Image (cartoon, rainbow, N blue to C red; front, side, top):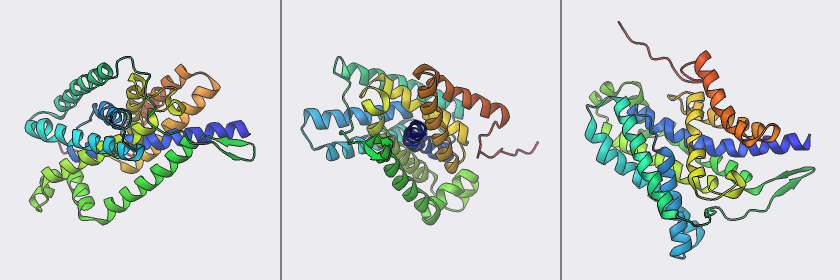
Length: 293
């Protein structure tokens, strides 16, 4: 029983991080209808800045971490302002392919810069917590608390502020929202900033040996991309679905890794995504768009 609880808590801890990443995917998609495949590499760039600011510049970890989060947010904003917003007439599929190209460029550059470094660990060591027979790795406890706070704040802002109202209105009908005076450009830009910042937070946990078995590396990028199945499972149009999808992916990964092996755990995440798409193509919480013929 204690082993089951440990695997369960590990899955919830990983799921909390995937939920943050999936939420970023969904926010950007709701604002622009673009699937941002560069999400993982934007996180990686933020993680690299944490490494540079901490190990090369010598800043305290918390300052370096904030610098990395801001870097991811600014990079996402630059992608939206300099590329996505300039291609307004382009089809959403073309913009998604554009982000695939950016992902390759960012990933290759960061891996080149890391070179032969020993995959830097971005998260400080946290002592495990023991409750009865159950030993909880500290990083998973911190990831759950962090995700709960950030997601809680996000939903309050999303439901109670003018920004949240504008975001929801634009997601429902962009043209109608524009006619009501909502500035589409500002809403879209802010969505990319929030999505980038969430990726910057997530990479702090992902690039740690406790989470990924190594520090910042190409593996971190692959793990960040596992948030894409999480967003699909929950439904790309649903912020609540992103949270549920993240937890589903985290638990699938954790139980698959413990009861079978690491390779199966990776595959199992995508198997779950395929099954959901077969039986509920819009995702568990996604809405089917109705079109008049």
